[in-house]
Image (cartoon, rainbow, N blue to C red):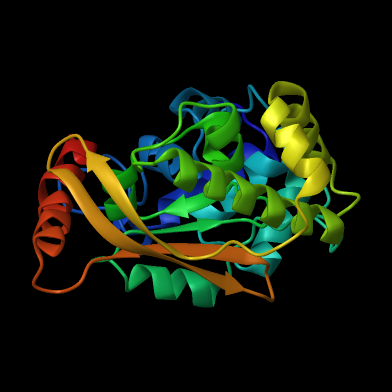
Length: 276
C-alpha cells in the first residue's frame, strides 16, 4: 500500500521494538515482529485509527506533541527523534518550550520500578508516561485530561480522596507550580493555551493565578478510593529531573501494612483488567 516516508519510518521502527522492551507483556502469536499498532497507540496516547492512518500515509501532518509521543513510545534516541520530526515536516522542540522528552536514563529507571506506581509529567503537569501499576491505581487518562491541573479545575477529578482543605491546598500548589513553569517558558504556545483555558474556564484558577506566588509542588500522603480494592493510603513523592524539567510521581506504601497488601493486589487484578 502506498505510504509516506513518515508512515514507512513509523512502521519500520514499530516492528523493531519488542513488547518486553517497553514494559508490555510478550508472548502469543504475532503476524509481524515488534509492537502491534494497538500497543503503539496505547503507549503514545493516540487512537489506533490515527496510527493506522499515519502509517498508510492517509494522515501526514501530525502535531509536534503527537510526534514527541510516538518518538517516546518507540524509545528513539536523539538522532532518530530529530529525524522523525523532520519526516513530519516539523522542527524538534527548542529550548524555549516545555520538553516532552524522556531521557534513556529516566526510561531505564522507570523500567526497573515495575512494583511501584510511577508516572512522568512534563513541566506543565501533562502526563507523558505511566507504568501499568500507576494506571491500575489511578485510572487511565486521555486527551486534555492527561494534564493534572486541567483535570483538577475543569475535568472529572481523580480517585484521590480530598477534604475541602486538602483540595484547596492541592489547587494552590498546582497553580503555584504552573506559575513557576510559565515564568520559565513565557513563549511556549501550548502552555499559554493551557493557562488561558484554565483562566477562562475556572474563576477559582483565575483568582489563584493572580495572587498565588510561584512555588514547587510538594509531596503528600494521599488516600485513594480504588474501585476494586477499596481505600488505601499511600505516600506520594514527586522527584524533579532538572535537566529535562520533568516530574516523576511515585506512590509507595509502608511494608507490611494493609495498604501495602492492597497495592500488591492492584498489581494483580488491576493490571489484568487493563490487559483484558
